Image 1: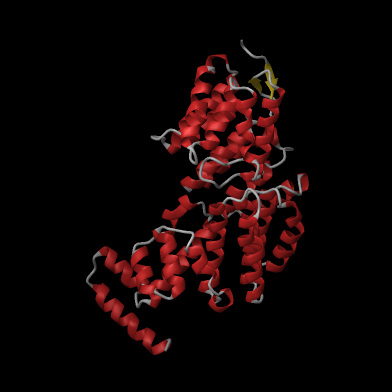
Image 2 (image 1 turned 90 degrees about the horizontal axis):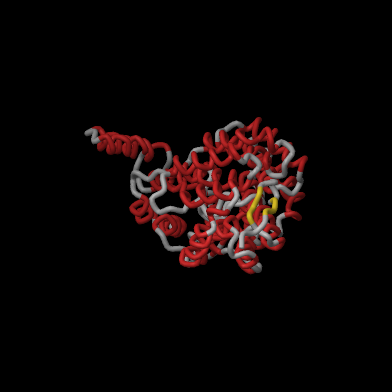
Length: 406
């Protein structure tokens, strides 16, 4: 039997007779707004909440709801793709009876999770969806996450500006506006957007995050720490990534502001690593912020204060970038440089989910390794170009280094 229609949070029609199903979908929207940006492409939702698996209850409440099935499938597709297949099939089987909104979401999500996806086309499909259904901030966030991994903040900004006029009083929209502005270096505009979002909802993690970025950029580290500490009481419901990422910013402010290294260590222990003990924690999201902070600490010579924390973290990780970081922390610079390679470019690691500010630290490590192993940037450049001058340039640089730095 064909179900009735209900309206979701955005006011769009969803084919279901189940109050529980539509309530679950709306709860997921909120969690998405809390979550966004990380957990690859799948968990990009609005508030970065740690209860986003609530969407799995939607197909249980109404197995025939197309929207509930496809959103649940999207949630599962990277972490447990076998469980996503029956949900996709259920959505397909009822697509003929779905609302126009559900069909648009289905098309955009199905292409997004397809193995042969073209990223530009995936963005265009979401742009088309948002032209027809501009209040759907979850689809906007999904598209922004994709743009982030593409390294295209310009596209992300274009999408949010496309729907801003009709959402100008909505929670989260200004935090979503602020982030691509930050990525584009438009700090004054990002600050305005962040402040407006914060005025609308003081618990919007993306508005908080944007303002912290601005304060850091302006080297107002004390102001950033005070602001984030005031906001911290609202972070408990956030995903593991967003919770620890906010504390990563606080620790980085202490570090850049030349506070005692023990302050940075305390943030690492009590607010980042300790997240692993909380119910619903996602370890990989914690590790991203843990390694980002430890890298900064080790570059600045905080080895002694942090003890064996890098080794403990390395035991949880297994890839070349993580291994190179571990080698660097141990002082095995030659082996670390071999792992990264002379042509290492941090931007190629955008897929790990890093802002430009986060990626900078890997460039710092690479430069440090080049210098510590007797290489020079000019020598590297000549070598890449195949120039005979590489050898003489390197020898001259080493002579100068011996003269001025020893």
